[in-house]
Image (cartoon, rainbow, N blue to C red; front, side, top):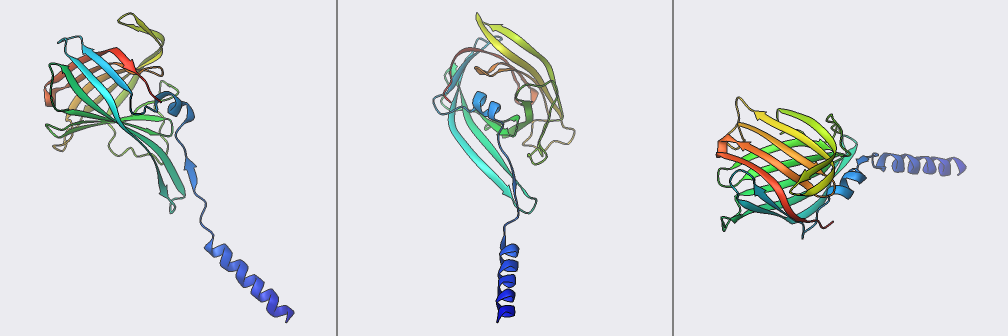
Length: 227
């Protein structure tokens, strides 16, 4: 009887061990990145093009956190996706042509820019790391399938002035794509500059997109940040 009891206990132990779920290592969104750039609905930025004088508004339309679990590979990855629409104020356009997505994974600040008129997409992954660094560091489980070809952090400044406003801790990053065999829905070439700070986000950007005959130098005029 004792042997039967021991055998039963052994079998139960084996069953529990085999049914135990494999350990999954989670990669959260960096706490500093989340604190600085996790924009909620109500956030907006107003930019003026220093070339044409046009004024555009950019506003957050959605904020979606998610977790991608790959139990077979033994990891899960937290992400936050911020949806942003761009509308022309001067001249007034009824529909948004450009839609932006900010994607946060680990310490990576990524961007997807979509032109709905020409069905063009631009992938910046990562746009930059935060806390800012002069080199790019990507987590092993992050999605980098559509990253652009060339990227470089040009500078990280303690202060930068735009229109009388002084911004602290400003990183300037250059992203360039030159796809020799780009599919029709990708920008075949672009060379953009982004000026980014934790207090206001992207405070200036130079967009050079020959595929869409787009050349802008947006400089921030007003902003409202909701986190």
